[in-house]
Length: 202
Ligand code: ADP
Ligand code: 5GP
Image (cartoon, rainbow, N blue to C red):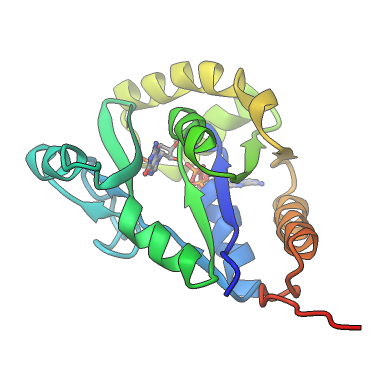
């Protein structure tokens, strides 16, 4: 069985990763979303085990400090800890499934050291639009909003390190771009559009 593709998606907070990914996953079979662990508090509507595994700092540190670390990568982002379960990702890739990680630029840099990911950066059309969207989402107070916007500048500076750049101006176009990238990468690695390995014998 050939290994699945490891896809890494990053964007500044409010860039549209969650929105785009939900739409792409709904229309493209064979993609598994990697549910991260975080010490951040759940937002209204977020479910433990679906959006994140919401854990205490102590629980997070105990997974992180295992040998080898229980996390494939982890980072402190906007004052909270976030990490990707090594076992969950390995098991799915080993089983031939394509796995998609929604992680920040620090986590993406760690993954590039140890694996062979396909990396995609999603950028907002402008900083002003990013702020408007973050405010519109209604999940941040003035303090966390300011922190996320300040961090966005550093995150945007890392976009050139990614294999692909998608500007999330019109949502339907951004969804189509990410979908096309995944389909092209599947063909490159001799998979069908749905992600099934192709055995061509002539
Ligand atoms: P992220 O997961 O990267 O933090 P979200 O997917 O939560 O970002 O998007 C932030 C906000 O912007 C959400 O309220 C979402 O509905 C909105 N949004 C996302 N993409 C667009 C777009 N292309 N045009 C207008 N609003 C958008
Ligand atoms: P949010 O709190 O808005 O859900 O996410 C904040 C940031 O943390 C986003 O940039 C998101 O991509 C990132 N993030 C989510 N999960 C992980 C993870 O497992 N590892 C890392 N490094 N970043 C993550």
